[in-house]
Length: 126
Length: 107
Image (cartoon, rainbow over all chains, first blue to last red; front, side, top):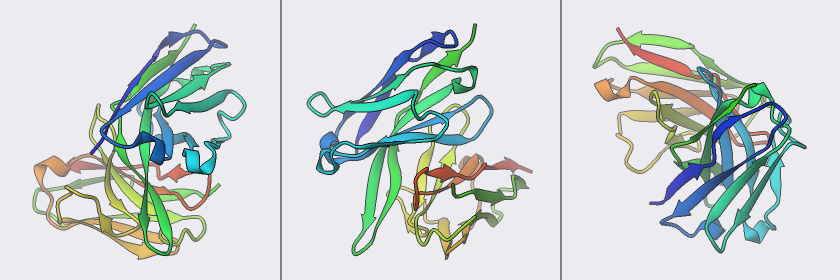
């Protein structure tokens, strides 16, 4: 089935840096695309970015709100996904979830996120 | 970016009711439409993927339909555990975007 566990959240000042980790278990991590999704307090879900798998050269995509400040990486040998967050802003305050990408279909493949971690909280405040 | 608009934003209903939540995309997304359920303090849970496919373990009272730009999540007979917030999501184009959520409350 699979399990994801995020860590690394905390209180950080504006302009600071933080690295989040997501430990994966129970599935072949290297086969999967992986996403980061965040949720600000009392708000909806916002996609942060995605790492493709090795077959797709680990390339990453980002939301415009974090592009140039956040970097997604992964270590398939350790089954870890990372989110390096630099130049943090107050509006980056959120619960950050990692999620497993899931491709379904036959001739055309459709993407969803079928396993989610419980999230880690990042608070950016002076 | 593709904008996803859900309606209503909130909904009050009773156990046993049939409930429908709508989601409209700002452009066609073919079948790249998913639905998630989120309860307070917990992570989102995938309910429906590719418009109408039921995720493993999800009760059959949940169903999805639609095509192109207009989609619907239906709960055929509300159960107490269904009171939550529901989000649609498009994965047709990057950036992936979510609807603003529909909060389903007990009447």
